[in-house]
Length: 225
Picture 1 (cartoon, rainbow, N blue to C red):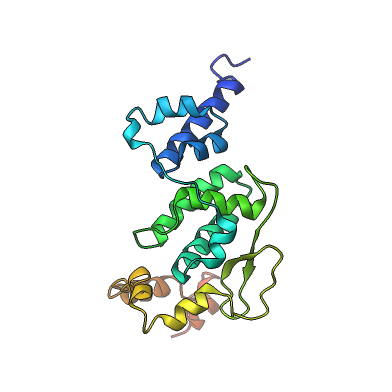
Picture 2: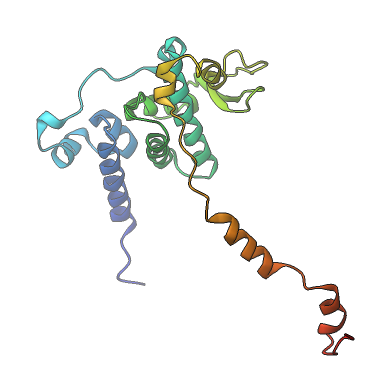
C-alpha cells in the first residue's frame, strides 16, 4: 500500500474546502456554500469570514417567479450563465463544480456590473436540475428556432418561435437601446495585418509539388528538360 496516498476522507474534506473558498471568492452566501460543500455554516464563517463585516448579507434569491418578470438584460445574462452550466454538466462535471466553473465563465463573457450573483446562479441551477434545495424543476433550457441560442424557459416549454428568446429581442433592440449597447459592446476585431503573409508561407510549405516533381522526383530519376 502506498503510504503517501491521501486517505479518501481527508481528500474529500480538502476538495470541500477548496470548493468553499472558490464559492466565497465569487461572492456566495454562507448558506449557499454550506449546501454546495456539506460543511457546517459555523465552520465556514470561522474559516472564510473572520471579519464578520465581510459576510455577504441580504435576502436569498428565489428564481422561478423572478425570472419570468425580470427585464431583458437580466434574462439574457441568466440564460448565458445557465447555458454555460449545462455545457459543463454535459461534460460529466459535478453540479457544484460545474456551477463554479460556469459562473467564472459568465463573468468573463458579460460586462460588469454583473446582473446575476453567484447565489442567483445557484438558485437558477437548482430550479433547473431539481438539486440541492428542491426536487422540483422549474426551468428548461430550450433552443430558439430563430437564432439557435439556448435560453431559459418554463420547465417543459418548447420554443415554436423566437417570441420568448431574449437573444433575439436583444438583437432587435441593439440599434436603439443604449443599455443593451453598454452591456454587450461591439468588440474591435484583432489586428490581422500579419496573418496573410504567414498563411501564404504555410500554404507554400504544404503545397503539392509540381507535376514534374511528382512524375520523376519520387523515383529518383532526373526528368527531361
